[in-house]
Length: 148
Image 1 (tube, rainbow, N blue to C red):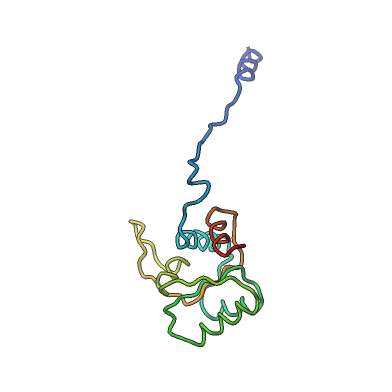
Image 2: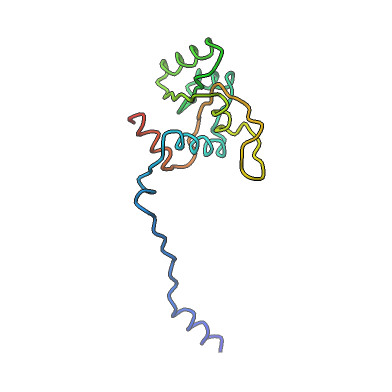
């Protein structure tokens, strides 16, 4: 009896569900800001994100960076000049974000409430991506933006 049940189960082919993805989703219609937010979240999860001026400058000086994100609203001109000079010297890609609060929210320096809205956002002047994390459409979009 058990052998009959095994024969029936073995004769039924197992099929994997087929999921079709729209062509727009594959090519990636992300804006640069959306792609940057996704890349920063993936880097944060994979422990490849450095946040804050001191730690970011150390990572840039060690050439331990793939991407540098700089806030345009940073009040300290010395930090901006130093970060831009280190990025230029070591050929590290730089992208600028309008506000430090926006950069802080992208980098995970906030609390998320029950509705999914960011609360208590802490501003960040500089964020450095040391490790990209996994391959994604957002990463490809950013690299295409830089022409690499």
